[in-house]
Length: 154
Image (cartoon, helix red, strand yellow):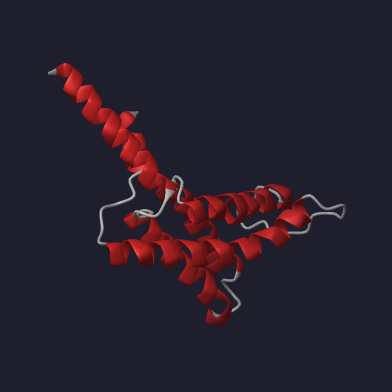
């Protein structure tokens, strides 16, 4: 379990320039995606009947709830840099479903944006949040704790 936690909260080790670029990428991707998710969140908890695409066959309400989880909750996690690598996965999947299933017959113009987001979330999942994140603070505490535990063993 300890290794899994280390991997999830691993912010990566990069130069200050790369850390700044990762921060900007996280903020832009997270905030922009949040603008898509807020409307869906309002629709999910609104009074009207839920009409939403059901590309996976789980029902319109479940599809909307999964999309809201991804576009709102995971976007917030990406913005603050908490569990960033893990939070990028549902967003990546949501964007692939949007591009390759929901908009499969709409042409590249409708697929382009979700594919670009998918590429961004792939980058974030691989590189991590960088230094300017809660992941970095958590990793620093873990590193300090690990050093203290190793010192006690000596």
